[in-house]
Length: 114
Image (cartoon, rainbow, N blue to C red; front, top):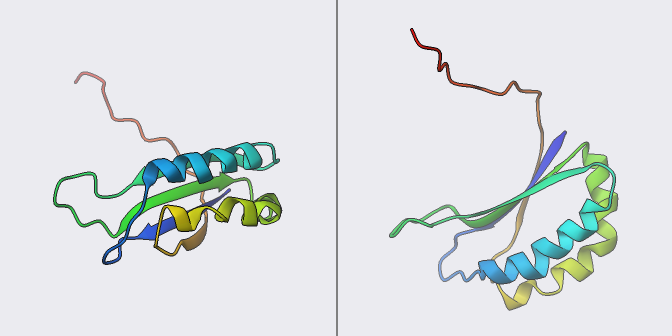
């Protein structure tokens, strides 16, 4: 599996409308990508939720796919449509990262009484 991270750096004088991003980008991308084979999940996060915090990123999206080869044909035909509204709610540039996920075991705390 792979995870595609799309983050928005917290630059000086940046603006980012999180609600607009959810409605104009994330929701349509879920509809588009959810219909494609290989799509597993999307997670959205917001930075700087604590008062006076200065996060490295104001927001990030994480798409999980079976393979990187599944993401490209799913997103490229719709890229113009999905990216067309961005100038209306942010002045930051996206940063993309692709990472291969290794298999993991779910961690569970030891709750047995001693």
